[in-house]
Length: 296
Image 1 (cartoon, rainbow, N blue to C red):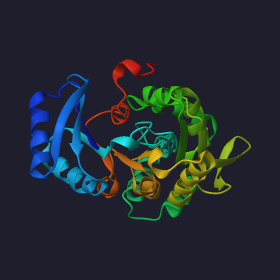
Image 2: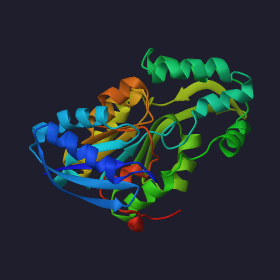
Image 3: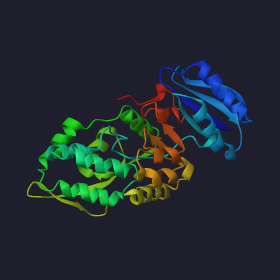
Image 4: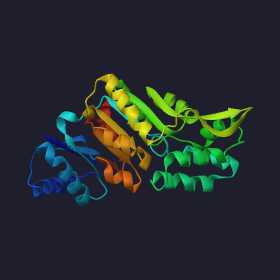
């Protein structure tokens, strides 16, 4: 059985569900029934079909339904035991290094490099080293100031992570950003584990270098595989979410790869695109109604 989940928080109608079922029928598949997960917000449609039908049905529904996020997956693969998330522009609404660069008067040129890296136009490792080098001499006190004044959680982030933890899932924050931002964020949101880069400092100022192994796209994928194997999970028990090209390998490795308000390259490759809703959409995607969410 295939489950199609429609998500349009506060504006999902029965007409939307009717349209989706018509598109299912146009694909030559039968839809025996549907139910609200939360009325007006999210609904599940049952579809009789084999695993080979999932990809084409996703494409058809994405094209045919406007303003609605659509999740298509096998019913038996819905619940996830490992959740892997990017940080910048995914769990938080900003790119932390861009905001930190503002204190050095370099936000515009640093943000331009970040954008090109997230679009996949330049090598992530090269872009990281170039941006960090530009921050040489910046006082480390500015990191705390930046974190306090400029960085905010994306809507639904804490509810998503805390609900998954309450249901027994392991949650991994894996970022090409920095421990100075990721560790406090992980503690606030409830992540189990963190993988991030480390900024070198000396005498209270950044040296312009990264210490240790760089967390790039390959390292993100490797972290997902490492935790999946340690936990003895099948690929379908893993969900990963990100927004940029450096998230692509881990998104492709996950059983359910999610592009969250993402750059075109990642959005094209992901199993799920969340373009219209906040991060709690990933709870509805797993069939979890609002009454079971862990509120913040």
